[in-house]
Length: 293
Image 1 (tube, rainbow, N blue to C red):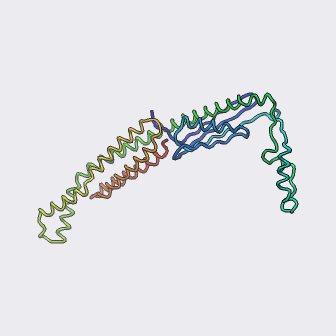
Image 2 (image 1 turned 90 degrees about the vertical axis):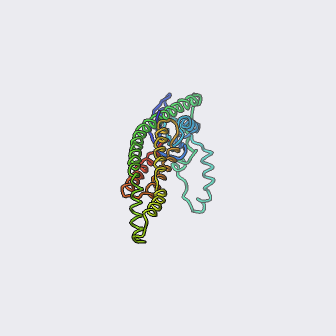
Image 3 (image 1 turned 60 degrees about the vertical axis):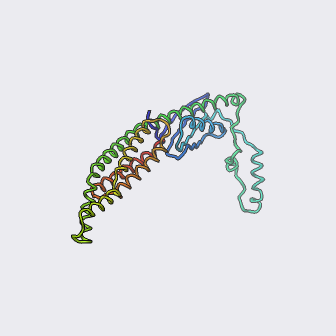
């Protein structure tokens, strides 16, 4: 198994009787799982179906689901709700009387919510439940396809992140080799500085003692060991299925913490460069980790 991305797209079509529809589902990064549904008027139960389908398969991401349904014009009979028109007219009567608004036009009234409705026959009403069930099945299928698309994206994403971990591992090894020269560099630097301050009177014993103390403070072996451990932990997470994005994001913070400390303790330009290269790769790894579910 591999990680899943939070980005993906799926489209699925369906039909029932004289109805046809298309479902589009797309997702992008998100801290948690957020589902937004847009569907045809009169099918309010489909929003719940979309949410349940997403929650059954996904754990993180902002998911947008749209369902566009059509029916032949000849199969739709409109009914005018005169009571609704009366309520709208009563509400706006004082505005018309005071000259604050023009008298309403017929097309304006018909465009108001709830005025013009599709009149369903008894047979239509009987088939509504079956129609919604068919639409809900398409929603579930689209969500399944979206999950598959996110997993495919996740496999590609895992490959990129594995290569970045290889870079981090190689740079850590290079830093470990370069760090072996740190004590000698610190001793030479301290000896030169001490001689400048106190002259030739500085004893070799004092130079060695002070340089040793500074070398302890500049030791980076713990940071390098932790970096190696983080690489192993990241590879373990990438091999898992499920939502590991939050743990990967936390791990990238630990990666960066060690790289920052390594750079700050560096006593050579070469080790500093390695530390900066490490930080650059870790930042790239963090950007990819933010796409993981």
